[in-house]
Image 1: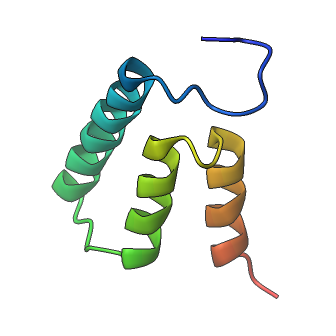
Image 2: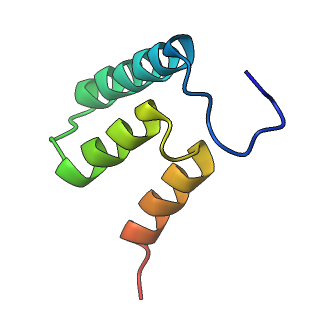
Length: 68
């Protein structure tokens, strides 16, 4: 992994690590009453694939729920 790269690592190991982290977060949310959200799941898929960074993911979620 290149720590100086602005884009996420797309190696199979990095993708698997992001997938496991996302699944663990989803499981914790389900225990708290999470209901399936297609927008969140689509963002999760893009994050796992390395299409968006953690910061971009966070900004998308904050923007989505930001009040006008």
